[in-house]
Length: 148
Image 1 (cartoon, rainbow, N blue to C red):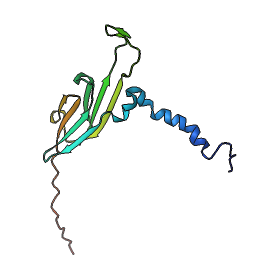
Image 2 (cartoon, rainbow, N blue to C red):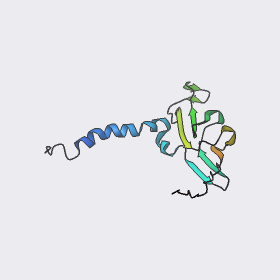
Image 3 (cartoon, rainbow, N blue to C red):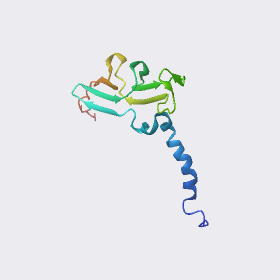
């Protein structure tokens, strides 16, 4: 179908582009332009365990929840702000800190329990230690004799 050149070649891309752009920036309202860099995670493997470090600057241990369900470890960090606009520090003119929740899930296997996972929050970094599940031993190859 021929479209009038008045609209250009990407009429619908431009039309839906604003909506799509708005959806992509929703979480930016939560943590500003740095939202894409929140909850950066490093995973290191050792012989007997894994170490997971998650950046959570500005969160306290009371703000963070760890849940283990169906083999998935979910890390949730929630932060609220005081609603009082006037404090001893003065009246808020511009606010770049927001309230909200960040969450990530990792599959850690069905063999782990809450007691197996060690967690520590230090200098805005949540450090987790997860033991490796023992590898299941594969059965030996056996030959089945055929009668006849």
